[in-house]
Length: 201
Image (cartoon, rainbow, N blue to C red; front, top):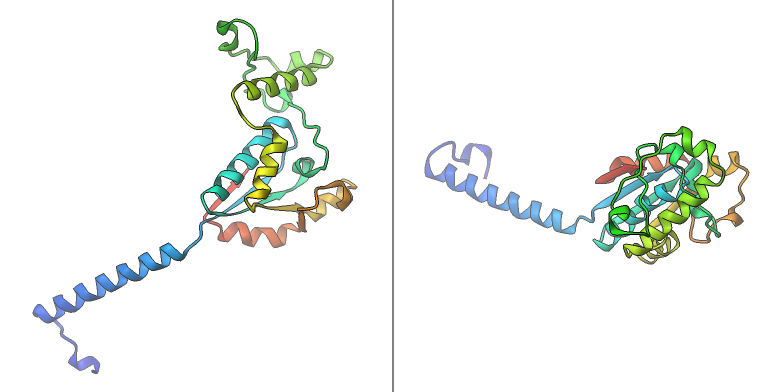
């Protein structure tokens, strides 16, 4: 059949258009079914409160069957150390409400906002805030950072450390857990560009 034989109007054209639309829809459904969603997360912070988002989002995405990669750079590298010692930093997050994990119910429900000047003047404030956050999360049944990290690895989330910041901060590969791979920003950015979901934490 050549182009001259194709219908230009009437029932034959309607029939051909209907067939084409049906075929196109079928092919798109096949393509969508075969596609594995992907997520790229860039983790830049190394405090306890900011360690939760990448691991929770990453493990959840992997549980949904997504291909997940987390790129750890700058202070985010602290989340890859073999021994974790992450602390809360209210100074870096002045909007963070403080919750009391103990005491009467009315006290536990109260948001205690603290100006930046107060934590900086109280010795040991960050350590106290860290203990309180860990206790609050435990009371709510939230897994620890160590557990979330292990869960992410078991779900095949790929951990990628920024080699440049590893060198800048004087880390050695032996400082980090064995499951980490290493790459530069130039290698990871194309991954983030092609991902269905890209997040920065």
